[in-house]
Amino acid sequence: MSMNWRSRLSVSVEAPGSEDPISVTPIDSLQPSFSFQAEPVHSIEDTHLGVIYSPDQINFSMTVKAIGGTGAPAAKLTQLAIKGQPFNIILETQEGEEDDWAFESIVLSDCIITNATPTNAAISGAPTATFSGFALAASSMADGTDGTMGAMGSADTNSGVPVEEEG
Image (cartoon, rainbow, N blue to C red; front, side, top):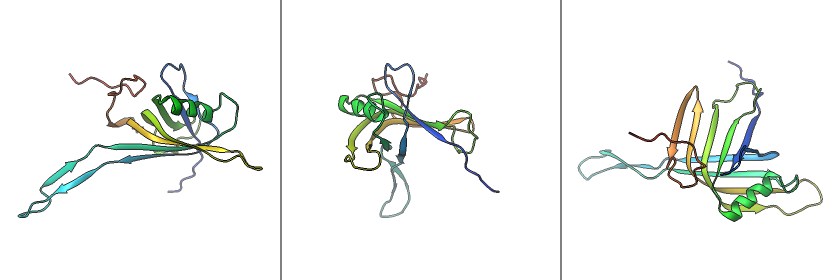
């Protein structure tokens, strides 16, 4: 089977109170990281008796070009970082593109930026800014099935992924 990757992915940011997500472009990279902590339970008389789960961790790092004026994504992300304001990161295939990607979308919800690092201004090339932090929740959609992790909807920002209440 041959695979020809032709799709383009889009990244957008959705802050509480904003009507539409803000497209993050130009963007150099987005690196989400999902950590599922578990360790086996052992005893002196037997091994692998069970498992102890620790809380999941969801982290991200995003590098964007620091160009485009005051409405640019680097400026908006810097404002969110300074205010400590939660927001969502949405990663999906650009509309109208081929369906080459394994996911329909990945959403990191209630993100908080913990580190913002702009590069030095230089004679050549556009400056960049790298933002890293954590999310309280994440969801993914693939083949019409969704998966979730984290404290879905537990933050009081109401900006996260909607959660169905257990009845």
